[in-house]
Image (tube, rainbow, N blue to C red; front, side, top):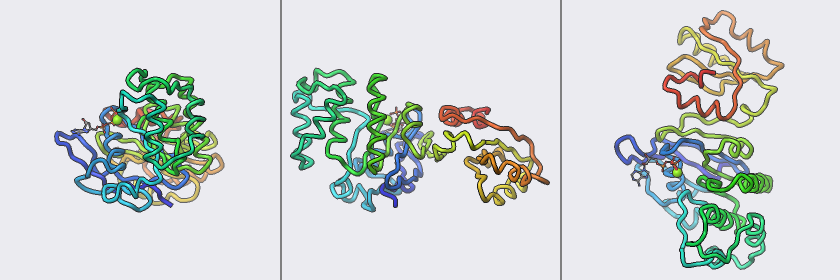
Length: 305
Ligand SMILES: Nc1ncnc2c1ncn2[C@@H]1O[C@H](COP(=O)(O)OP(=O)(O)OP(=O)(O)O)[C@@H](O)[C@H]1O
Ligand SMILES: [Mg+2]
């Protein structure tokens, strides 16, 4: 079941800026990672999902409720961690937690206290006197403290030191185990790698790939890069794929694809190439970083892998 649905979401800020036809969904209990360089459109997508901006086209919905139409209903069960932190400077951390708890109708502070201790956050400081990392910790506490079913987080761990990033990763994993649905953007490969079930890559406002993180993690599967000499054979192979070998990425322009094959199916895979005109066949080792970087080469050849 999809808890988050983003469909053809478009916001054109002019001069090629914005997001264009962004579509993906996040299933119940899934952790979905959103990767992209600065200015790619992560925050714009997330802000639209939260109903803060009206799209030119398409929609974003949570549990079937279009956020921009009925924000309070759509966000009833959502914890949100914004990319840009803006806190009321005069309030102490504790006062801010209290204010946000009241807004969420929360009267039990046990989880907030536990999170505060977990992140070793001094909530007696006023927000304006907090360091960047402290402010980030405070927004993490506020996003998680009401124990929401769905967490939407824009670069949640940026500004945290490596030890606290680890603490954050463990928290996300534990929450996922408890059945939470999580969408988070990040620049940190290790974070996305260790938490996320699926990963979308956004570039210049468009989703260029959505991949299962298993494909990257599992060594018992091999990835082959295949390039065909002609479209007829490219299409013939693409259409013949069934069973356990699976095209995980395609580059139609280059007539190339990456095929993910179980060890035991390698022979079948090689047999399926018989009679097809192949320009290049090579095994590739994928790390998330390789995979991500492959979208940022001028001449896209899966990172030259
Ligand atoms: N309100 C706005 N008005 C005009 N342009 C905007 C606005 N918001 C975002 N943009 C542009 O849209 C593009 C996507 O910006 P966005 O903030 O979504 O990127 P991002 O992927 O979150 O980047 P970062 O990693 O730096 O946070 C950028 O080119 C940005 O300049
Ligand atoms: Mg951003």
